[in-house]
Image (cartoon, rainbow, N blue to C red):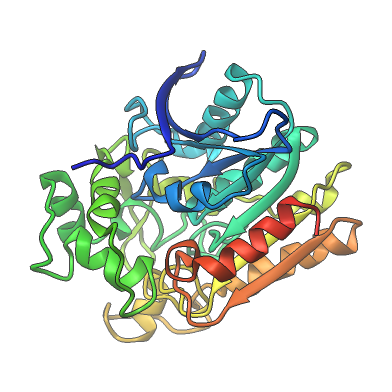
Length: 352
């Protein structure tokens, strides 16, 4: 099956950190108006960005980077105690190797967190940032409305929160739709809005199956906890990178340089939300996981409210941000509502 679309060039770029898989949609004009770097989310790869890249104005150069352990990049261990910095540093290493200069960053889901970490680390090299259904600036799970950690060990967060059947099917390369835990069914149920049909679904499933499964990659390790539900964040692998003890990018308001930020999210996002069933505490509240200790101890994480709170502080400190909520869209609005997504992104890149 052909997974790289016409008009896209695939290449591997060697940096001091890794050899990374990349996809490029070159500018079709002699003068490049802007360079955009796309960062994919968890259990995916740069393949997902191809339709968006091809729809960009002709004067824009677009490059999508595979994170370590995904797509065509090296399978290297992920040190979760650095939060999302392994990924952020890898993307910056590709930007530097290609001598791209200041770039517009676009990150989806976990990739939105990578972009915020990049912004914190090198704001002067960021022309703008676009966050698409991003992980909360306080991580994924284990915090209250103000971003405060609920337990000292981040109980209910990290590698052991992954669905074991889904992990096993990823490792087995399952392309079927026979079970709710199959990657294809997970894509249909959570990546896009309900009922969305896509001619490229086989490519998206192939992208998901490029995820390297293991303790050092997806989903990562875990630890026993005296707190409900009995497990907590580990120190290795992808899901632990977003544990709040390791990942907190809420301090972007203190940056001296504040590039403009666009936040795009779907009304029907099933993964990132104020009441998502990807949050263990929400599963407890709903009775799916028994023994939930209640709202006072283990409240579901209000991810959308947290992101809005942090971006409003960024604006109040002199930065600029725009929020675009796309009605009827899911976790990947660039896939299920491309016209609305493109309108927002293109205006942002043009400085609108």
